[in-house]
Length: 592
Image 1 (cartoon, one colour):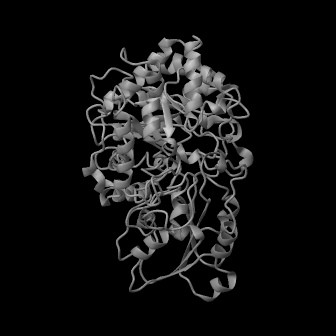
Image 2: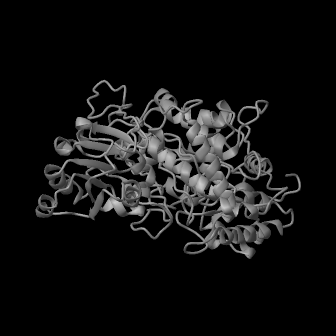
Image 3: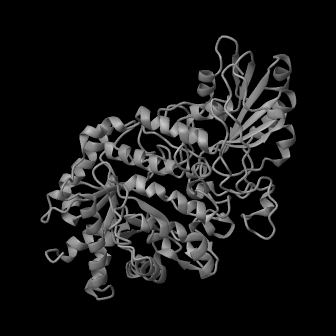
């Protein structure tokens, strides 16, 4: 650091989007980090090799600067390495939270999420990327929030237990490591990022980026435990939330960033903004930007996800330091933290990607792990007359609903594109419909798929039973804010029509509990499948009894949105299905 100029130090604090990065920009501004925003890739269906080529080029540009400080490339990996074609897409966090009570032969999950973290790290490294904006340790207290599926649970204890994923991503921190010091255990591991600090899941009415109104005790007891647990496990970075706490923007909260995070919790990694986090400190965005930079940097933020207007940011920050409005000691603290993480990651010794790892992307082993996660995440909510598990033999089976044969729907948001997408061509995986076809006995059973069958058809075909797969359409962040939480049509009408005509199992594909009570009287079997990801075979594994149901609700399932917010432990707690609920079944013999 003694050899660095102010411009070189400021460069280390800057993260820019890959689309504005170039050899000249990397060299002239000493850029410290590059990222892929949501859905940003080197090309449609880009291979691991194409990703590596891009990342290595940015790295060579960084290494060609005077001091040769390597850049760090970051990307969102919300449920697996989910921006990349052919990557393994795991269930979203709300589903993983439902696995928490699943016993294994040796211990109890969340060992599962640790293995998922390790697989995700390996797939990221297969594309040359060493830094992931994960895990999200938000505690979603209102399912109307558009990011609720990114939260493991409404219960801070469950969220804390799921931070075991940090050790999967980064490696097991040595017992001798001082508290708060970041740790990354080699070339198959990545730097992780606990986000979004702090209280993002507690905003009024679940409105994204809004205000969390809560006492300090409430903030620390509900929303802080995930960060404490992550820091103990050596998490490398922490991302600040867009939201406010009692009216104060988190990106400018010196008390909580410098005082509590860096002071009380002794966090020694670096603190990063969210995308345009400083811009969003004002309304309208980017108004009085220089003042937002002043507030954010003095609050204790170390790296700024600019990500586009880097020249303006660099010029403004340089002026603020030159005018002594931001002390040099604050710049030095930020750069020291960024360099500490880079040294910990081994970037100075091994700055370029290891191309021998490319075959780990979407590997069979990782897909089997995702399939296991799907099985353990399914929650059985109703099972009249032991409807489930379903027979594989001697049946005429109707499968209905657009979500049955739509890989994009079952993966949800943050899959290839930021908002997700519809269809089966965006990436590689197994739809629920394909999984059903793979599982039933092909000699004695017939499977018929009708996306939206009418009443006349239902009455004339003589079906043994129906599997109705309905749910939400993909969304992410603010676009997912939803004040009514109803299943989009034709889902509700289809449930009513099919389940009144045929014995039926309804599989709900959603990122949160949705309104289901009005239709419950017609449903024989009800399954919450959440957003299972690419490995739909895990759904059929349990529907047909190869494995038993074991998942437990990680969130309260409400009767009506008028009850929200409603969380376990509340004084007036009258859910349709309570937190921790989940019926169980035993595996059956194939002959059943």
